[in-house]
Length: 178
Image (cartoon, rainbow, N blue to C red):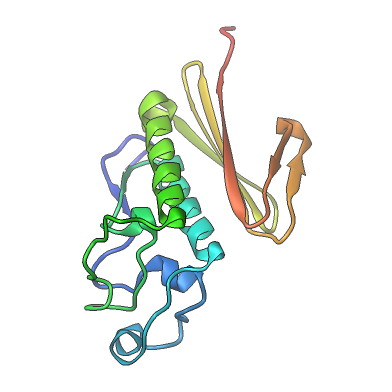
């Protein structure tokens, strides 16, 4: 569909287990997540689950298309497959849920401020096995997302940035006209 399209990148849906539960290790890819939702209590996400949920949203914003949030993913709502992934939406957020909610709101604000994230060209780098870099450019704007899936912080000299272990960060820049 090219770099400028209106395809949606969805974070989850009612037919799949909650991403935060998978990322936290509370559900495995090899188990029946529907049965798990019926037969046991799926715990709230771990710190890693929250980080991975934020990283997934950052990825959806970094790649071409329209980022779409399934309800509850903005606070890492947990659960197995249907019907366990259709819990009532809580509005009395825990401190960790509130942090994630704010982080995702900031990502959405970045997307609205930088046309590079709507119309820009996309370049993807993988300089190391556990490091992914997505660069979006449009006119004089450049936005970079750095995803680190390793257990150690990574310093990237080319961009003078440290990417936290098992997390992501981003940079925005207005380039000088040539």
